[in-house]
Image (cartoon, rainbow, N blue to C red; front, side, top):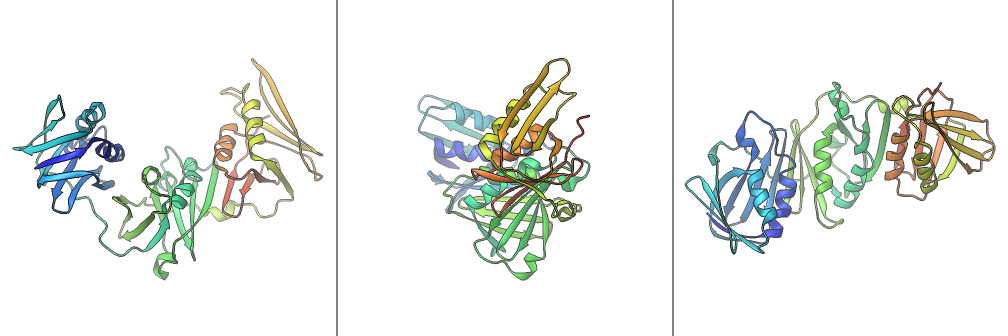
Length: 368
């Protein structure tokens, strides 16, 4: 196999491919990438047996077809440190030789036939979504997934389809984010009945796909897997097994205390009032009164902070505590200059809404 790569294009490919290469694994071959060259072009594959990437590399000249499996970290380091515009790659007898203008590297590979198969996208899509819309939706929910949980369903994002709308829902048990994304076309009826949980790792990979916002992501459900095809990248992933919580039951619908607030101003107030909180007093208090909202944080050994802002509010006063980091993360993904905050009682969750497509439910904390 003899290939001539544009170094930047190869570096871009390896940047996303190495996202799925495991650092530790009892199968050393999984720490490698598979490079396959034929008349159609060059594709590079990576997998950890749960998530796989099939990447068609652009800007490459194929002199001789072939296949090689090489350690991902070694190849990536060589490409990253190189200053050449073009890198030559030659594979023979299980080794891979990489040459630049003044450099020559030899990497020992593994048996290509032992590398696990990584699916491509060769079937009709079940649904299509604009890349920009999907990535915007991912950013508005992914942060709310559980980082570590024995309830595996919380380690992923629920996909739920109604008509030409896709709802993405994530929760860690203390907060919940839901955003709605427009589909490019209405999917088949059997797909609208499906509720699947996509791993957080896979959602993060989708957010890394480069390209034009108007590029279309094709989605296909196959048994316990989901496939995503966009431009020159195919991502395949196992689905999360388990039952996602009945999230609709925890979204409040009877609140009478409603405020319209500035996203930027509240974000600043939350950050400032949290400056004097500590590990023992992680919460801030929101005191809502007539035409006034006060954010306060306190630590017995350090002091206290208060930030006040005027608001248009005539309902009953209320004091409620929240985790400031959970508030900041939600405000960070709101794209509108204003948002709605709805409250019930001090022991009931707060509800944040932005436009028609984003809501966030946040459990209160006890500050007494």
